[in-house]
Picture 1: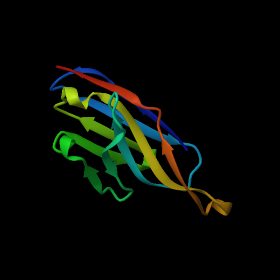
Picture 2: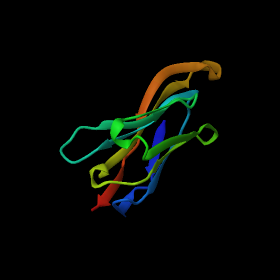
Picture 3: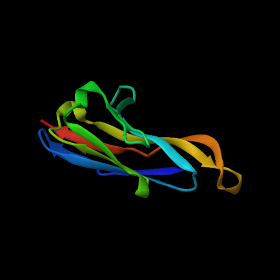
Length: 124
């Protein structure tokens, strides 16, 4: 399973960006998809996640400013980021887990996959 992330860029504080992440390849199903970010010199941390049922979870620093959505038909998630702050500057990675294809298109082994990352820079 390959994840392709896009939508990063340079924006002023208070601005908005929308990230996209699309899954491609052969898989039976995708369960959870999420966004993570890694600032220079820091570890990669969860930002938001969404299950296949549409349940969402956000970390405290982005609650009320970021919205994660999912288009299951397109195997794509989005992260709408508003009121961006300089501390949101990081490389943003998408993640997915699910089941690979087994025999006769039955559920196979579990998989996890990371996208390549997209840079978000917020200037003050």
